Image 1 (cartoon, rainbow, N blue to C red):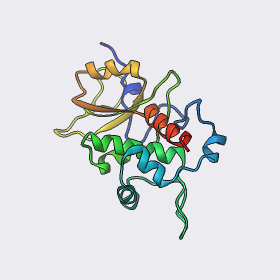
Image 2 (cartoon, one colour; image 1 turned 180 degrees about the horizontal axis):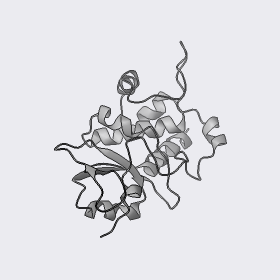
Image 3 (cartoon, rainbow, N blue to C red; image 1 turned 135 degrees about the vertical axis):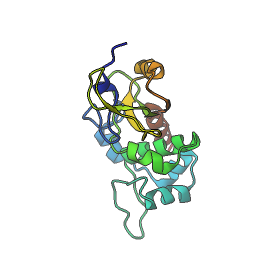
Image 4 (tube, rainbow, N blue to C red; image 1 turned 60 degrees about the horizontal axis):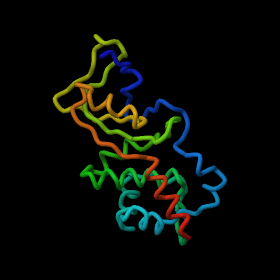
Length: 182
């Protein structure tokens, strides 16, 4: 099997697409019009308010809007999706500190749902089959965003030791549903 590893394996904070994760459902106008409060996030992801504050204070989630003294923080859709990723991976047993480096460049894919995959395996230095790669006894996890159609490639790749997946579009749908229930 001849795979293009340069497209498949990427660094922790690098993405293969240049646009930020949004779907056709939400435009920038509706994102600005919708105020996403911490209570909406608590209700949407079934995570405690204090847990969200702890993730922010530890730097796992860095909201785009500053918190003004005496006012409730308003989260952006991007913040909400990043929080949803942390919450979903935490439910799978990941430490939030291990997930945080993978949420800095969340984006969508053109052909449907976007899956954020955190995986462990060697990281190729180039796309050539005989290229050198970094492989330690305990390799650092890497991540990429793929469409569901590409998941079998990852699952059958003999160099990938383990992986876990979260659907970014599902997270966005849960947020949109929570915002629509006002």
